[in-house]
Image (cartoon, rainbow, N blue to C red; front, side):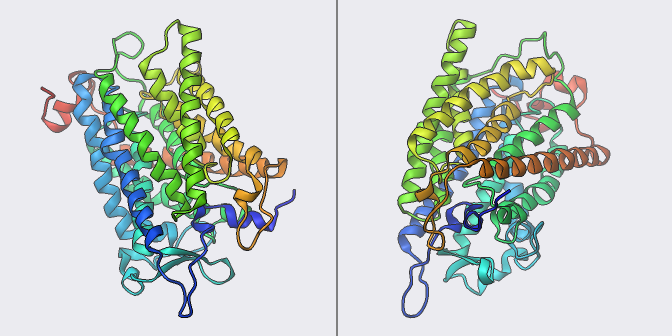
Length: 443
């Protein structure tokens, strides 16, 4: 199998494609690029609080609305501290092919070059940017925050809050950080393999989706699942949340260009196209099979398209983005309806059905639709286009992340269960997590 050297420069977001502004005294921080990255960072954080918090809260029952929002809010705080102390170092320290070292522990290393452009890696593999490392660290932190927050949709209504806290500390450091290093650090083995992931198809969506599936299986079905009324409490909240996710996703994808340039513009355009196409595909599929197009279906479809375009957003043109969106909308609809019912698991808010399945769709379709000039760098001016070779690389990376996440998540859930217990008691679940876990009630 051919593994072209030029693909090595495309295995991470376009931070790997950024070229520093040169002057007589060396590279300089570009204020325009930095301003865009600060904006993108805020947009990605907005995706979790309040975006995902509202999206998920609107889809659970009234007795669990506050607890569901609390999960996203608490994870934001938990992962921030974990990332600052050791997570960033494990993900983006030099390390080896599998994990970073502790050179960035407590972020003390930022003191030395806080006002200089950031270079990731060293030697021939080094990749320079035009932003300070503080901004890069914070941008990556927002990715680390939203990934475990996405998992909570799979076990909504039934996990103990103490278990949520412990599990997310372990999962962030032992599952998320290594995979981020594999894919986005020049030393990472998936980076070296040449598999493409512009903004987190493997690192975020397949990772979170598979972890959610494992969590749903380990915790078991909700009390009353299949016969009690589990209709969403307030879809208006979910629509607002979905809208915030859609807007915030421009920071997620276009921000992964790590600069305010043409690649960021293309990433933003294809993100919009894919989201719209997937929303329509899901909507019309539901209309054809169930007789009516639902609000829940439309917003779920949009998220499915956003998920699928994420790994491809820096490498594809608008027409392929349209195709990716259409495929994702149909795949997400199938995963959230037919597959879930066929296999009988209770993925409460379709974390696997949307993020896992559509993340796989997007990761594989990068290998089909990658466009040469978009994939070109200063060192590889001919670029790269989709091919069977690239599709095989994408499948290999996707399978590796799927397996590692599934096995690792299962182990961490079992460890958490031994230490604090995973699931609330049946009577507590019937009363609702708002009261039993937090002593509060939605008015």
